Length: 205
Image (cartoon, rainbow, N blue to C red; front, side):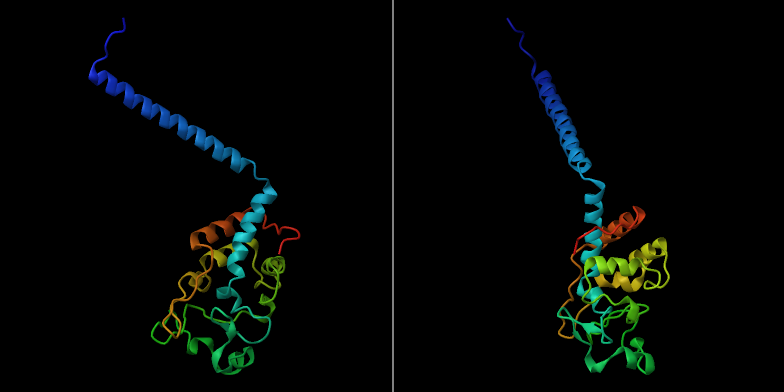
């Protein structure tokens, strides 16, 4: 006949089973995750990083200041800047910092960040495909003569770029839309994409 187990021994055996079982399950789950991650080719992983970066750079928070013409855009609908502001009158008489201060003015609805400015004409992104924008930001003749490392720091640290995730409120008191990618995920994707060679996927828009 089987000996009867004492209650403390039964409890110990049951707890041990739960702990051991959970450890085994965790290892199995981790292995499955590793297998799924390892199944990604370098090109697939690069495409994910590339599109994560471009999800931000093609959002109106960025495009509005990178117009294809001489007119900066505003709002979620990217309408022309109020008061007939153009590149010509910005350069000739009106400075962006006259209205756009170092921080958002939620009372007036005027957004602000340090170094607020319209992107140079050779940095126009409006109407370009993702591949065309990527080629532009990697071209020293169009990106302010920046190396890959300098570009990485610009995209992940510059206060005006980081403003996109803290855009303040518009004239109607509505909080402006932020890019579709969280800031920390964007920063991570930029660094990984550039550190892995800043490869532009082929035939991807």
